[in-house]
Length: 276
Ligand SMILES: [Zn+2]
Ligand SMILES: [Zn+2]
Image 1 (cartoon, rainbow, N blue to C red):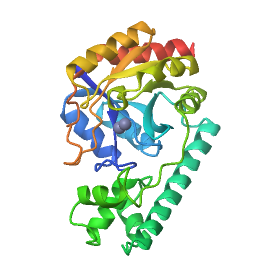
Image 2 (tube, rainbow, N blue to C red; image 1 turned 180 degrees about the horizontal axis):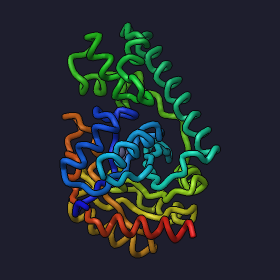
Image 3 (cartoon, helix red, strand yellow; image 1 turned 135 degrees about the vertical axis):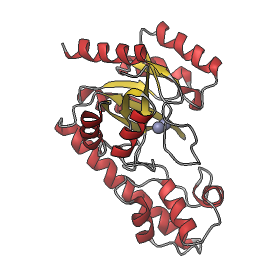
């Protein structure tokens, strides 16, 4: 069993560039004993990763990263040890997939009105098996040569202030927490250091939040220490991971946060206690 774990990993089922099977193999090569697959608003990659993990000898935690919203702010709620067959959860994931596709279609319409003739089919091609997100639209814009780069796509069109931007289908952090709890999962607030809205945490704790992600590439060491203390204050566990996407635009390598095995054990213990 490897010394380190990585509890925040994306695959081609959302906006990562490696397939679930590849990510598991890479985890084994990186000496990781445990990884959690936490794709955005989908668990499509989990079964495949579990199967690969059984073959290769990497423990895979079924997870998700739900996008939730407060005002104009994105708050990500990680969910661990989900029961994938809980039917309200399945329906919820299906709804997210439909809503994301519809949002992308509307963003392409907005682009078309701006004189950018991007075809929705190209976006679908780029997204492949993934739940569609803005990165796919950006890549499609590059592929059809409407922009020179991924960054330009965000800067000119689909960034938060861009003329073709549309917000995702909205759920609140509390709703996200409830969805995860109902599927038997452990909800954990993802990288709170990016939104810095710590005043929202007590409400999330009341809604059933069970952990805070403390180790993350966008958290400098002092932020990690601060959120570790905050987790203790609220009696929550803390987690961490690389938020691995595998592409050069989101650079952190798999396992790069060097999260200790004890962090995983605390998560697993909590899950086992909650289940008992
Ligand atoms: Zn996130
Ligand atoms: Zn993530």
